[in-house]
Image (tube, rainbow, N blue to C red; front, side, top):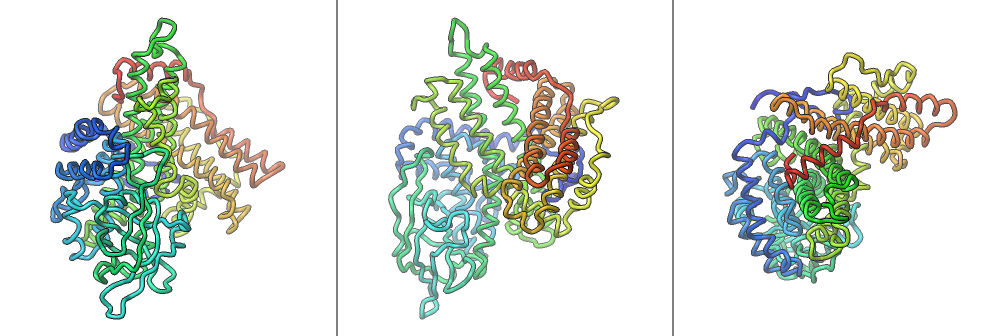
Length: 592
């Protein structure tokens, strides 16, 4: 693997990186494209034709479709060859997550099995546990699930009441409790269950087979969307779990849960891209067929605006997702040199990029909600009909802002984790932030004379980072340790960080793409509109933050600095969006 410069998690706020050090989707190799095509073909052949029946909540049907995907090898992408898988890179795993994301509720069942239902055993299981369960999970012979949430323990997972006590003969843990919102519960063979042993303060994790006496599966929940996915409560009534099925060490369950949530978040960031691209395809194809006032609606400026905005947001999100995916791959290689274990190296690398994982979970889920909502609008009345895919996609999309930790929790994690990493010394955040905050009169803004196209965009993004740093320092100076209770301000900062990471990833992707393909004007249109819109989003978030921790002359001086830092040259966004939409309309599908 060639040497490339990687940033630590959250370090993008204070350091620049060269476009050549960024991985972009246009660099997928033939094997990766073939794997993605296999997944796409599977959806066309096995999922879409049965979607109506799957949506009726037929557990046996969903399980049979999942097993077929296992027989095809789709479930073994992230599993090492020694356990019957293919040992593919993290980038490839993310590509599979993206491609299967177009599969509606099948995607939810598939991702739950291959991710949170399988990987805790692979990453934290001992040799015997891995050998016993992972090969069968890799082929679909066994289907997995993950049981963490309880009626009284959602975002605060460690407050769960499910208990485990050692039997008198020392051979079993006796499990009692209740779990809810468990994906694949209705047909899973294996459950990764979290419970507290005796009076422990923190959770432990167990591998529970659904066939154990005392495991009772409730009926499937009636949900707004993802209706084909089995979601049910599970009850544990004096369930005897063999002591050898303790996963990891006693009391390590909370760490396992958090690590797996990092993984789930970042893979959701890829998963929603596949759903979004299918939704864009549905949108443009309908717009190219539907006539009103004697004209195709794809010829109307208002529809072109919607189509272009869908493309811009998908493309930006995708750029950020694969940027960090390659960073994780590189870190896995480095960590494996030290520990010698691919599983532990992988989960530690994913956990390291916790800031980006939380960031992309929010960005991706909100991007898909926007795309799905606009798709319904483009379809008009037909978009509200259950006959159309966009109706199903709209309902299915909504859960992503709740899955893997709510977006409210993840926004707080973006800011809080970045600050904690800086406090640990991972990177210098606070000195630079203080310098900017104390000297707002020395800031320079929109002067771009003599700068090339990409140098100008880089300057704007650098200024956005300065605006975020000013807000971080001002908030910390005002509230100190009490900042943790100022969630609105933390959210303002998180929103700035999310926009910055996307814009920077997008700019690097397009710069690298131009070096590979030559002049690419429509992609520069995407970047132009994104940078222009981001300036206004950053300004609004920064104004809200500053006015929440400063007032009077101090606020006025900082607001002035923010205005300077978020200044950009004007862009004819109407024409740019029309050119973007024009390509989409001509191709009649997403080919960006």
